[in-house]
Length: 138
Image (cartoon, rainbow, N blue to C red; front, side):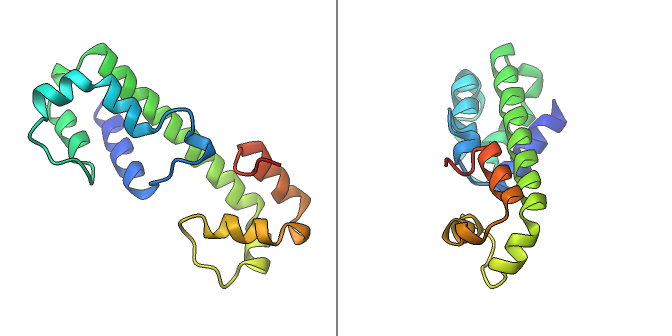
């Protein structure tokens, strides 16, 4: 459980995105809904943000309900799938990004926008990776 909470906290801070990979319900909503009782009971005085709620849940991990534990594991699994998909796209599109987007700073969807802007020049391999992971709809 400690590893799950830690992983969610670190990755949620690093990847503050909620695109198609995480669209059905945000990771924050999953944990907030699944751990609502624990958050109001143990963490109501904690200021949200920067992983403080997760740290609070970590402190009370021996008191978490099955529902809350499931929500944490579900969020961690979804986040892991999203990170895996992003890694796959980064590998498949590396040459395109290097060639077409070399002056574009990573973050906030800028590289994806660059690839979309240069769609006619993007390799088939990169396009398939974007479509297969849901980062590109067409």
